Length: 319
Image 1 (cartoon, helix red, strand yellow):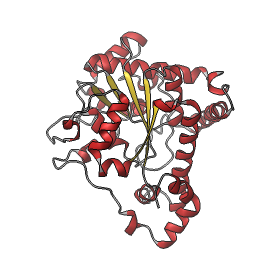
Image 2 (cartoon, rainbow, N blue to C red; image 1 turned 45 degrees about the horizontal axis):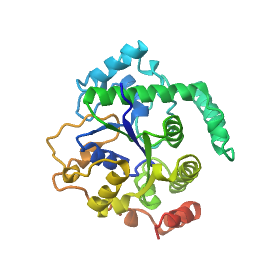
Image 3 (cartoon, rainbow, N blue to C red; image 1 turned 30 degrees about the horizontal axis):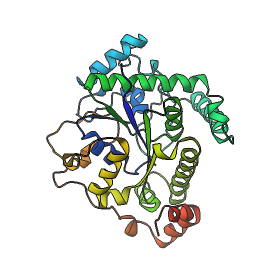
């Protein structure tokens, strides 16, 4: 199987990655896989493909899982975690948690491995991740690449879109294959992200998570990824000028721009894992910027956000 071109989207939760992956997936040469790292959990919990069928029963995903089985001798539909795609630990913020899998000792193990990995990613110079990557991470990267190749082969695509949003995973995928991996760092106004997460956490916690995510993502991308292989995109700019920004993005990716990438057919069936593309199947096209935070956040909320993440938000151009 030939290695496809990988477009990996890093973005905080509620940051617009679903919309961007859907637009890129509208290209006839691209496969929008959704959140690849969450596939084991989605299979284990019998969650749906965006076509409406359970992911494990979706006929479009069937040849992908069959191809993975031929290589690994593991049927992910029967043993979802038998093919390691990396640790994904959820701690609030919405979405289902596989509590039969995510036990306290596994969470501890994940935090320990993540801490060691972060240590090597933070080492100065050309050491760190280039010198040592834990075997478990190397294995998860190889399995993820196997899934990419299986999807590209089964669906006859040249590009695969992964909206898993995990910055450490993005770095390791890139370091393993810098010729074929491109990373889009998608940023949304932290106040908008914070307002959208109030149902699950406080303003301060949401601001802290947004700030932490983009701080480490920017630092690691700048350190480990060549400038020509990473692309910073603001969500608000994209929804305000979708054609211009998409043309620029396609040129950077080496993907031919097509006007119909920005057209949404409500009858089109989409097959991606995780996310919620159904809310973007709109015949009128891409919605304008969501600025409900202006009414949802009180003066005290805005001050709390500013104290935690205001400086970084301004660095990204949000006043």
